Amino acid sequence: MTDMESRKGTETRAASPSAGTQKTFGPGASSGDRGRTTIADGVVEKIAGLAARDVVGVHAMGSGFARTFGAVRDRVPGGTRSASVSRGVKAEVGEVQTALDLEIVVEYGFAILEVADSVRSNVINAVERMTGLEVVEVNIAVSDVKLPDEEDGDEEEPGRSRVQ
Image 1: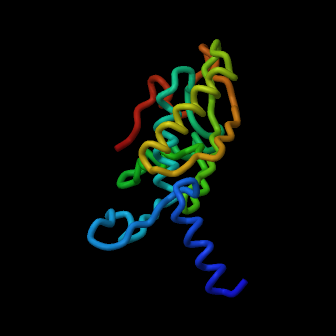
Image 2: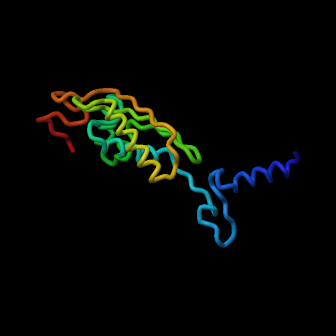
Image 3: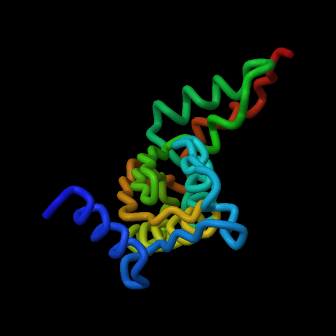
């Protein structure tokens, strides 16, 4: 098979309806055929972080250290709060697919597997809807359970004022 024949075979496969995306050129071409869109890892991490926090039973995202460090960083004047949205989320983004790792804290009394399944479903729906990327996997690590009588590490201690 010559090089031209192999390219021609590839073009035919790419243009067949069962092969996935079709390319149309000329005046009738869609805007997606006239450029390339890339989505940064951080964008997917923010979307996934917000979607995970929307699930009932999720108390917080990230490990204890990450939450404590993030709470301190959030209180620094002029600091950005956007990092706290993606805390506990790591995304690997390719051209058409993404994979996510989430670390969550579940509130006591909730079924951990049900919360994890709800988080996974919510994250997949949000990321695929907003980015068009295929989510190939969402790995969830439950790092802690928030007990009802336990103080939050992210909150200020009662009776203690913050100097501004």
